Length: 355
Image (cartoon, rainbow, N blue to C red; front, side, top):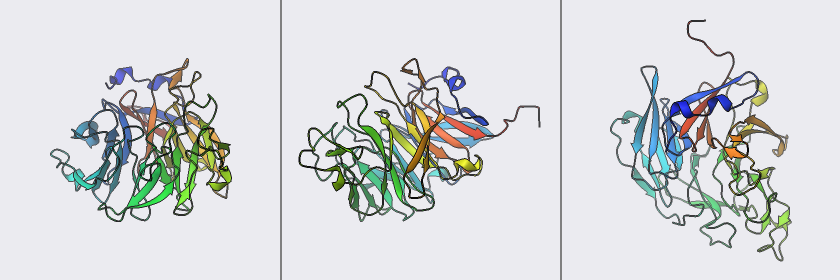
């Protein structure tokens, strides 16, 4: 159930000095992935309900519409040239000219249906790269398993679903990625395994530098720990190490490189990462947005808090999932716990009746 607008925890959320946070839209049960249309429509996917939503601006007010229903885990969304791409558990579909038909949208057309049907880590995050290809990951079908060649990977395909190829393996479960604005390399978050300890392994931030890299799962964890179950006879040097670590069991999900001009210059090309928060750690971590800064070689230099307040007395009052940069440089954040999307801006807020 989505929380009522007056029950949202906005007043408890904290952002750095000079920034503001407000509710952008509410009432969307299990709001997850975000995508932006050419005409300003914000599309919102879900994992636990069957719906894709559209947030539209009408007569100066925002309105939430149900764009599609009857879908199965429609978590992943991507938008390109008027077409919305939707990833469900085992298939990817598209709706063409979607913003021209928001009041009467056609049913999605399937473009790829050869994805595994495993529930564990089966929900998808998708994106369209600088190469104009659709990137679709498949997580491991369990906590820590020796998976088939159809799992634990990222593949890309043409926008019509043809030409699918695997570009990375050893990926446990990525639910967020983006391309560096300068190098155009793909960076992705990856969730570490559970039930090893409270403090290891940490979630990873990885970078693909060439097709075919293996990122370690399930043999090597966080780049420097050989897995006690499957790592016998293996060395972490055999695999591509993460460029940064994102906290133990923090559930790092959506991420975006900030390229806008609204935020101060110090935020240019940093990665804003949503950490959904740990579910099985006694002292919870995550439930926030962090800012990752990078060294010249593309590795992570530092990780700093950006949005906090979702975790209160070791309990969640909200859980961020994805971030989306708007055309004006503001940043949207989805919260599946409350079924809402927030907007982060920088600068003096305008008050009614004042210039």
